[in-house]
Amino acid sequence: MSTLKLEIFTPEAVAYRDDVEMVLIPAELGDMGVYPMHVPVMTRINPGELVVTKGGETVHLAIGEGFAEITQTNVRVLVDMAIEERFIDEKAVEEAIERAQKDIREALLGNQEVASAQIALMKGMAQLKVRRRSYSPGPAQV
Amino acid sequence: MAANTRDIRRRIKSVKNTAQITKAMQMVAASKMRKAQNAATASRPYAQELSRLLMPFTNYVIEDESQAHPLMQNREGGRDLVIVVSTDKGLCGALNTNLLRELTHFDPVTTEFVCVGRKGLQFLARGKRDVIAEFSLKDNFSFFDAQIVAKFCLDRFLSGQVNRITAVYSDFINTLTQVPTRKQLVPLRSLDVGNAELGMVDGPSDTVVKVEVPEYILEPNQTDFLNSLLPHFVFYKIFHLILESRASEHSARMVAMKSATDNAKQIIKDLTLEYNKIRQASITTEILEIATAQMVLS
Image 1 (cartoon, helix red, strand yellow):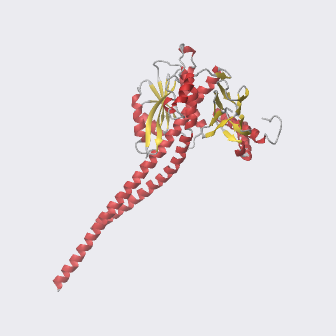
Image 2: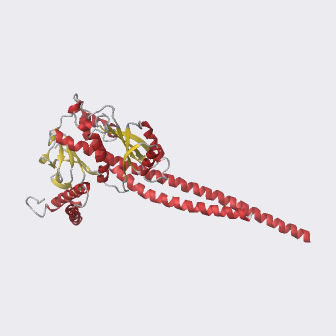
């Protein structure tokens, strides 16, 4: 069976690198399921959930904003965050979300900081969505 | 004689103090260095992939210059903007001297400078160059801090005040080697946007294939895609080269402080030897005097 080479890069590290069967990418125009021999595409990515299927098992990752490049044999994902489900610290994420919401509410900060708080917020939401997927069936509330 | 030994003792003491300080600074620099080096090397794969993502666009020949994305438009003549990434503090060997020598390549009349780090600012102010902004970043600066610098520079390019943006920074090779580097960031049309870096990734054969197939479908559409990819590339590039500079700074400081400590230890050794010689000489003279006195008396 043919496979795709999936690589996920973040500024901190190479978050994931493996041969996989299928990957579900939260692209800007909607989720994209990518199998081998996909037509070459470059797309923007929204913060959300990326699902990898390999050997019948799935791995869920929370990812941030970024870009993806898809060719027939490779998928390269460049995002500002990528965390596997099992590494997500729900409590820390909740705190981060609260902090970001507070920053935005108070809005004493400059434009840059508000933007940064908003991105922190979106990242936190994406993590929670992935983490709580198994507990709350149905569409996640973001 | 006694005055002389006291002098030497005092000098030994002061050199010891210096050695202690340089040793402490070496330790501090070493721990910062590890952190900075990790940050710089860990962010390299992302930077390389980003360059690679951009290659199909930068290698694509556009006949009509005005149809190109603003960040890709070559504009002749005009003014240059140079981002100078230096250190805030000295005591890091020849790092800044080597770096600032690169600045002589720019025409002082048509070039304006943006400084990150105080040493570069001091140098340019002494030379009465045109410094339009100075940013000081903390040791643990974030992508957003770097983005503020990058946005400022891009705004000047997009508004047509400058026609090129170049960065001058210390590229980190390893603890002993840092290379002062000049790199043009904008416009993104030079064909070598990331060729040098790409040489280091998976292998050249892969790269060649990628360049030959620029027929990607772009989502949501070409304009939107480029509008977000190109600025992000510039932001990240600037962020990354500041990381590289920081790694260089702490490495250079660590090495400089280590050699300072070694030198101080050598001086202490020499001075101690001299001190012991003088002390021995004075003891010998004293014994001689006593012996002579004894002989005269008996």
